[in-house]
Amino acid sequence: MTEQEVRELVRAAIARHRGPVAPPAASEPQARPAHVSHQRFLLPPSDGPCLIEPAVPCTHCGFCQSYGH
Image 1 (tube, rainbow, N blue to C red):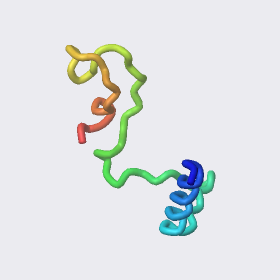
Image 2 (cartoon, one colour):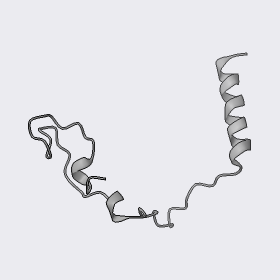
Image 3 (cartoon, helix red, strand yellow):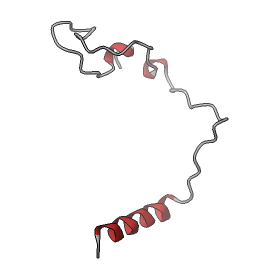
């Protein structure tokens, strides 16, 4: 059995388990986070120091874009 055949078997098994899944329509609004602590601020990307701890480089963890949760 080839790797591609194994992949097809796995995909078919997952599809049977999940059932039919339709992609969201473009006109449907995106689901909003349940709580304000899960929302993110729009900040420009930084390749410099971390906004929270300037002694270390930015690792793009997203902590500065949220309320810290």
